Image 1 (cartoon, rainbow, N blue to C red):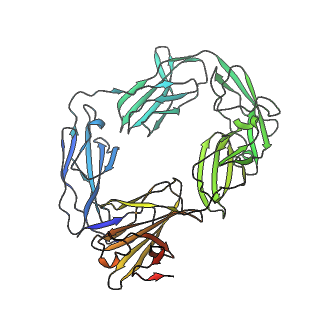
Image 2 (image 1 turned 120 degrees about the vertical axis):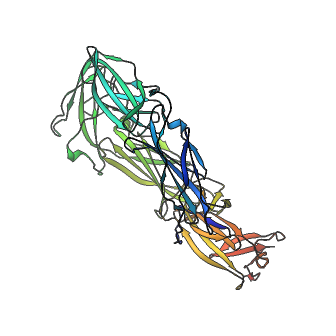
Image 3 (image 1 turned 60 degrees about the horizontal axis):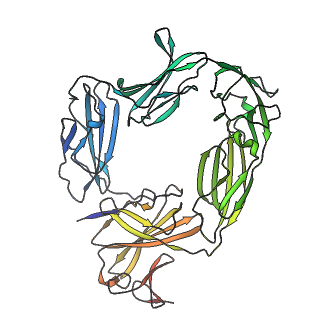
Length: 506
């Protein structure tokens, strides 16, 4: 008997009897390809996925992981380096309950050839102490800042990160003249398998940067910064951090605070003094068509590190959130629907996490508040994915209802109401219910998309064997419109509504 799961990673789950999954057998290497065999499953179970892991032989450190569809081999050649020894493991998963097998390990595999070290591409060093490297995939990277001492290179600072993709990291601060370079090492365990070295940079001129706290607290220490480098933002007293009372702390090149220093962009070209500022600021939001704009005064744009935007329904139910670096002029997102009221909230954070906020902007989108059609499609008969196509893309809370046709009672029965368990709107346009359906039965699945309390879109899909008793709801020879009212599946034909038994609903 075939079984089907109507997936819902975003909806409530239902208890299912757990079934044992036999482990893969004959896990072995053939050159750089790991291969295995899958035992036969019993009952209604079907293989649903496989996870493979790659380890170093020396310390069993996980260096690569991949999960995907069922297969009997995985090509690791892109992750293996000459002269190194590796172990790999396989774990399989099966539906209907997505239980995993034991993790089965291979024997050791040593890659033929002499040990070599490949290049980390595009390694650069900035005068601010940032090291950048090009993409080397799933790999630890150790970035090191070095200073030349005669004919030797001395480590100044180092860090290790899990990001092997193209990236820039602040490794250390250059505090004195000299010749500097950066090294980026790609690591598997403790073994350097890739290395890149930046071009050397000469630091000849340093400038003093002093901080005047203007009696707010003790002055921070003076620092020395290379010419054309950025200033690292200094620490401040605790009473000027993490406040949400509308005051912000920033530094400016003048005592009055009219010229804030931009720590993300401004560079030092001479001896510099920065002055501490603790000021009350307000936001002025306004709507322009479907775009919400705000202003805090042009001269204060550099004061803020983050802008956070929240959108709520009229009943103040959450709809959307977005954070961005810096202080933007306006925010627009194509998720407003006709005839609904939206509340806009903006929060600005300075570099010390002080906050100013405003939630006064209310906007009504013109037009009628119609419920839009939602086209549901069953797209995966094994994993049970139901996808939708909506007329307009947005961020929604999803609610679904599962119905089962009871032939003996000649009636639709509601099996379950399936709601978003996280209580948070999603962008995804697919649904994954963990409820298992028999394709010999007949089911109806409805889904509704909400923004706060606003019902935006609604749709219906059927699954399974359609008995003749229900052909007035969905049949090849009946032209009708499906309707959901008070949780009931109805049809509209020739301007009249009928229930599943063909009885007219007045």
